[in-house]
Length: 308
Length: 227
Image 1 (tube, chains in turn orange, blue):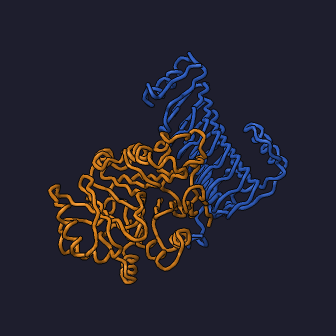
Image 2: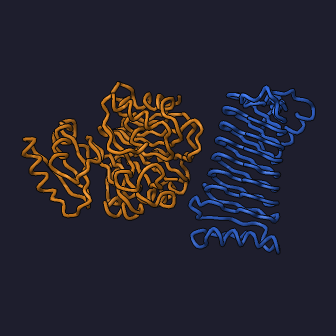
Image 3: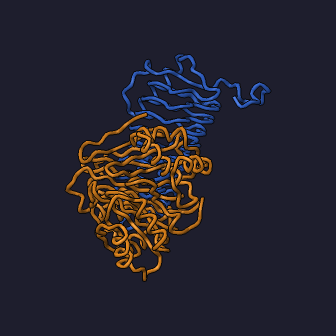
């Protein structure tokens, strides 16, 4: 079943309240996905000179300070870091391959959730309420956020199989549905140099978008092409460093509802996830059309809706 | 009028209060508030009562309705007025997919757009949509009328039996065995009547009629490849 939710702020004044506005949205979709939950929050941008690496380790005794210190010595540049429950965010240089390789060889049990200038992905097994509380979602700030509550169908209930999936810098995706050509597509994308952490179908969709955008497609163009190349049923919500997008497959049997005001754009699997948003009574509320790419990007008040 | 807040009652309790009106009519006009988009509001009614629902509602709103008049002051989720038998359901906003699915009778009015599969397997209901409908609308429709003041999406009326479809705007494509048909006097008359019942000011002369070519009723070997 699964539930997906997303919130993109157009009004900068709401940014300090992003977590507070989003937490009830995620929790309300607990009925659709009680197995695990996760969210990708965008904010606290570190600029072009550095990247943020969001890490997670199931062992609560993980020595994050020791890992950060050793990584700093290896890279020869400062690693600024903070811990959030079972996760840690490291801010350091832009050589992601060096960081990834060092972590793999020197920090067993540490998983790299996301890499980017702005994105932080936090996810885990358990009811959405537990996951939100574990990471303190309520108090978080940022520009936009997407989340997922999972009822597993295609792969195991574990942290690795939880959404969102990120395969490229700042790009991530949540998915309600299932893809039927993900094995073949994964093989093709691996040949193109994409890396996969799991056998999950949604990770393939994320990798597909990463590949298209690396090839020069805009977010809109990549999603338009996805309609032809992804087989299966899906409602996707996608986040990029400064963008937010929604796409449904041509049959559109997975639900989606959107709402827009001057202050925000929101999407959810069900309208009841949107009822606590400010001004929702007077928002434009509609069901996104199949095959149609909805994109907002570029920062406050420059949103656009792009039809195919 | 009796107002019930879903901040104080469960959906089950509210629906039970409305169902109790079938045994003894004590209150003809109800208003439901604070429902936060919950599903299955005002379902299974069987009495000539009026129910106003404040704000956007969830899935399967006013399903299986008999006799009652339900007004939703907002949008609705999947399957509004599903399997309605009689009465009237009026959505003062947009509707999600499968609006009026399998409904046998009554009138469903949607002021805004209806998404995919509007009137799927309709069995006698009348549906009047002020805006447009999505793909596969009136799929396998068996009886009743669907009036669309805007446009229709792909595969309108696919595998249609006997429902009559009227569309004012464009039709992206017709489904298997659905064809455009001539507008005769009785069609102008029924369309005018339906638009009047829905409260829409549209000129029947702007509409086209679609219906079944009746080529798929029985097995025909020429259709064996799918068609």
